[in-house]
Length: 148
Image 1 (spheres, rainbow, N blue to C red):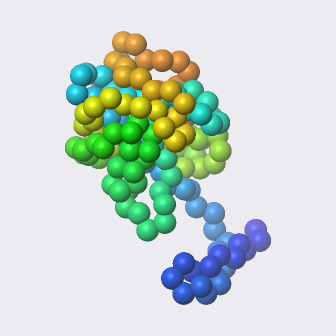
Image 2 (cartoon, rainbow, N blue to C red):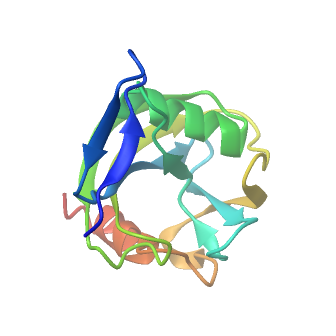
């Protein structure tokens, strides 16, 4: 494997890295004050309905990422209530290996689709939309069954 050159963001030193690592992401199960959970319809590939979430930015904690992604995709400021579970199957995202820390949050107000979301809705276990992207159907099954 050919080494990849990267620059240190602090000092600019060139480093060499031979390893490829999974990319950290977050997903946020937002429990809406009127009942149900908020899902977004994705504007970009892979298409379908998804739990709001996205990629960490450099220097950002998982909690900060979750709050930012929730605001960017749903236009809501949410309150994180707990960390739910981590999902790491290398096949969970067709674009590459990601590891997602899933949070549960409370949301108030009228959700509005923004950023990568082209649609948004509040759903219950009994009226989930289709298709659901990534491994989010499994995450929602785990959530509704109170597996974790």
